[in-house]
Amino acid sequence: MKIYVSIDMEGLWGVHSPDQLHAGEREHERTRHLMVDELNVVIKALFQHGATDVLVNDAHGSMDNVLIEKLDSRAALIGGSAKRYSMMAEIDQGYDGAVFIGYHPKASTQEGIFDHTYSGRVIRDVTVNDVSMSEAGLNARLAGHFGVPVMLVSGDNVVCDAMRDELGDVTTFAVKKTLSRTAARHLPRRDLEAGYGAAIERAMRHGGVMKTELTPVVGRIAFKESMMTDKPAQWSGVRRIDATTLEVTADDFASFYEAFLLMLTLAK
Ligand SMILES: [Zn+2]
Image (cartoon, rainbow, N blue to C red; front, top):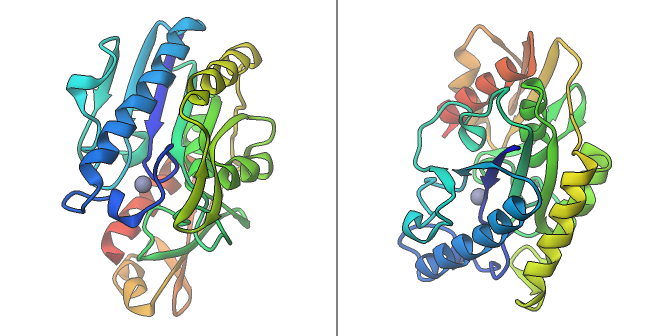
């Protein structure tokens, strides 16, 4: 089985402080070690339960966080940006399942660790066919467009709970309980391995959840300020709904996802 792993940082075990998230910040280097440690626990369990190939996509911030020299030598890694489909770079029909590690709740979630959707500074909300989506929800639909089911989502308890609404009966594993946007109660370290082991065993047996979207896809992006909306609003492919909201209609989900990423780039 070929498994695609997209790894973010905010929802990882041991992460709760803004000082941990970006290059140059006090605790970022430490977090890179936590990241590869958790990733290796996941990769080990994936191979134990039937994976034959694992591709990891570094999907956080500048996307060059994973310490490749410490990564399980059986896994391939996509590092860096810019890359087509961003957090889901190189996803295609060749995969049997997708796994989202270290994910976090969507923008404007109460008491969700580092709640945001793609860009905390720029985006207030993203809706697809009238349903508000987290990064996991959006990325799952892109995987679904290519016929790839989502096997597992891990992160804080809030994103895991939200998955029932956004994805249905997908396997989740909460590595921490969120107390506020920047505070969490982490599982004991020794429980990580057993927790991931059980979750991945279930996921591989269960087969994951394939999420596809009705077409055409009507997506709305609500930006935080009108200034951010002005540049992407110049494109004839979008309709401006109000000062801070743009709407785009796309033939399929992959085309919507591309348009969304372009708008985000213009808005920054
Ligand atoms: Zn992130």
